[in-house]
Image 1: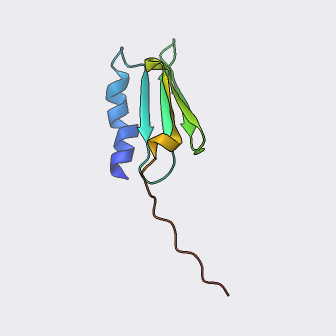
Image 2 (image 1 turned 180 degrees about the vertical axis):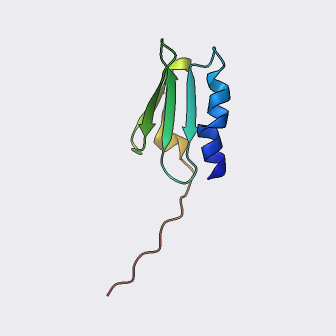
Length: 86
């Protein structure tokens, strides 16, 4: 969790200082979640959050898109134990 906070905070603050950086992508390792931050012409950053397993994540800076299903193709998340039948 601390690494995720650092990636969103301190690391991103450093990267925002790079004028060439157009997009910043964060991929969660514990759930279907990809956040794409895109630099706007006025230097604001726009966040697009993707959690739908059927979604496609646009990466305009490199002229491509990635399907969440491809990003998480071989990832298996721990599922909570099912409640026993009563």
